[in-house]
Image (cartoon, rainbow, N blue to C red; front, side):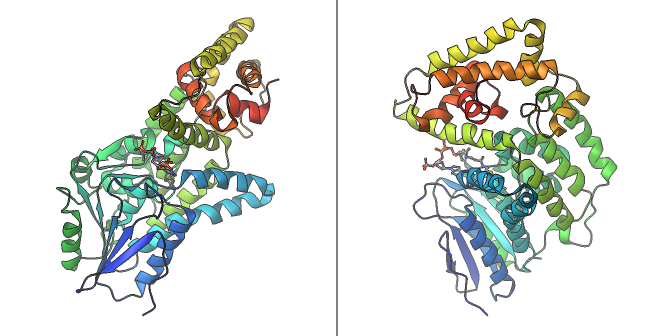
Length: 438
Ligand SMILES: C/C=C/C(=O)SCCNC(=O)CCNC(=O)[C@H](O)C(C)(C)COP(=O)(O)OP(=O)(O)OC[C@H]1O[C@@H](n2cnc3c(N)ncnc32)[C@H](O)[C@@H]1OP(=O)(O)O
């Protein structure tokens, strides 16, 4: 048997009776996340596991506050820049190459023919939740801080580590949609009731519960890899997702591509085998992640939010935030006013200050169109919407010296909240950097 692969983000410990504990514990970080290196390590571990002589595996976290917060969003933002810097014809292959390891690693883990249990306390979000779902036996503590969720859509992404496939297979499509599309979370009781978790135990007992399951010499296969698994028909899946898709597109005007992409993964993957489902998820992810909206939302809604919270805790937010947001709002309203009825329609069309529910077919067209309307505005309403956003960018341009460059994401976040700037375009500074202010 070969030696365990060298890992820096995971520690291991072996019990006398052959249970291997894999403890996720990133050095020098307060929170476990799936960095590229951690993904590489867990894939190497899964490869090793298949040929090993262990009785089974128990995965847990070395952090007291959380299991794992998902893929490393800072690295994800950098990956976007790396992919976009490549020649256009190479981007698809580069994207698949870069983003398929996480789903591949989790699939290898659940098909290594060894029982894998997970014992999680605290948050298991995004890729952390996807790892949790890929384990055969899933224990959660019943503490109030323990929750599982897939918040990728909140930053314009989809759960690309098998989350769009495993959660609906465990819970049924309908019960999974709040988590997949709205950032809802399950606590331990709900996760067990819906089949996403196997057992809820008081904090401190989770590792023993997971070990006990491994010692029972269980079948090391997921339900969908057993011969009695019956996947739903395409019609059955569509009967649930079609009305949801219509509602979401109507509500968002088609400006947020993650939610329809998640529904695409479900529509394509649930009636198929797990391997086909994972392949469909990677294919949809490849197109989504090359769009600008996820990049804008990661920068502002995640990186900007972390910075905003940090500075607020220290009572050190930049001065002039409210005044700036008020100026941005006034500039957008003034431009819309100048443009009369077309301006009013443009505010609604672009979802400035919230989107008014609109026409499904039109929203579907907006969601599909490449380049997006703001890259190539064509109708009068689109041109007016661009002009209104450019008016916000003009304010940002005048205030370039007011805020430090590293504060722009948090200022943009404030403009989403206080001036109604639409999240898919980041904020006035993001818009200025990309499209200028003319
Ligand atoms: C294919 C798969 C895709 C994905 O998985 S995409 C990622 C999906 N996950 C998320 O969107 C979760 C993002 N994180 C959060 O929402 C919050 O964080 C938490 C709810 C997990 C915790 O919130 P709070 O307790 O307020 O802590 P904090 O200040 O936000 O984070 C603590 C430290 O953890 C880092 N961090 C958290 N999540 C991530 C992440 N996903 N990628 C990179 N870093 C992350 C932060 O930056 C910060 O770091 P510092 O202590 O150095 O300031």
